[in-house]
Image (cartoon, rainbow, N blue to C red):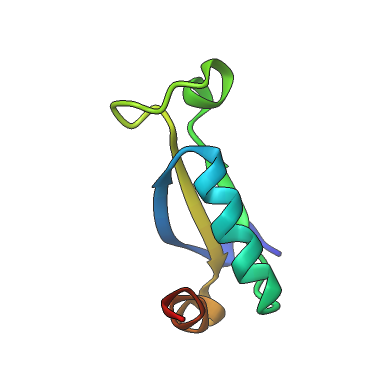
Length: 71
């Protein structure tokens, strides 16, 4: 999965929620890359955007991913 082909599907607060979203998308066969904000990941802070996690998917599967999460 090339990072240049990825788009941000959504941003969530905290790694737990991000892992849940990732698991759901992967169950539909959609590859996912989670992009963490470094300070939030290191210190476990989830306020003021420090715990923000971007859920990245291949551009061509973004619409399918949105539909999968709507189910």
